[in-house]
Image 1: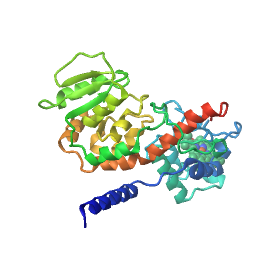
Image 2: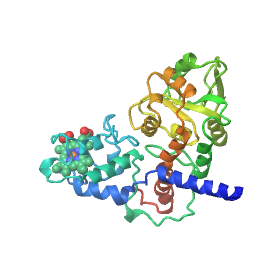
Image 3: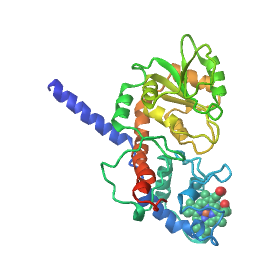
Image 4: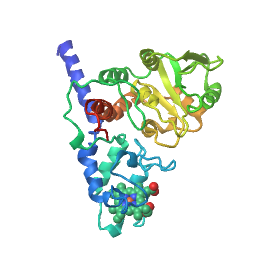
Length: 336
Ligand code: HEC
């Protein structure tokens, strides 16, 4: 076999591998919404008088409402999401829909909802409001708020994942501290002080308000391209966000091949479920041990599995961007 043929074959097999590794993305509007509509909207729908538990599942705001710090869906983590706990509950009193409603979900339907949440619980507009998608629709590249996901190029991610975590990764750890309080910069610095060895450096970016200390490099605010280049040189991305902070920085870092070391912050923190799936040893309030584990004995294949897990987020990101950002511009008055 010629070298060129072998290479071509390897590329094809790689493609197959990546394909097989990623579960097909669940389509909210086509697959999930009809289940909710048939089984939940009677009590959690538009009719205020019939509405139970003040829970509304027919609109995005209701589905992802904060509910005093207890949202019913935690994107990326079905097991921790009350909605999933209630539809899968063994005890009759807990189960949704309630037995007295004479509605039941099949195991298949429950499983589909589980997958949808684990894949990031992307909510799309009802098809009636979504104009046909143009393949060359403009990409809006900016961090999205709320439970929004990533926007980054697919090919770059695959390349990064294929490089693995050791190639050219000369920076031990990176932290993004755009808002030092919310990102709990103090917690990360305290952990790093005890965790770092030799000349390992933690690069702190996103903030200028910090005194230089041993083992810590300050990068200040970076342009997006420089920030990405930094992520691609780092072995670990460390985050200890407060409850209300669930930015996409950890997801971007995963996409760029970093190991994610993080505290198990509550709240809708989409990267948390992924981090746990990829390596539960790296999710801990004991950041010192988690950092050492990541730097000394990373799990083989972490980057590849991260790339596979992020696949649904990528497509969803583009869809969401179109639905949330582009369509409202094109069709004013039609936002969800
Ligand atoms: C016949 C009415 C009825 C239907 C249908 C129904 N629910 Fe409920 N739901 C309730 C009532 C009443 C409560 C509040 C009491 C409780 O928590 O058991 C509730 C509570 C909940 C809660 C807990 C809210 C919280 O903050 O703790 C969730 C989650 C939920 N329902 C999800 C669903 C889902 C998902 C469906 C459809 C698969 C559904 N329900 C269908 C009546 C209903």
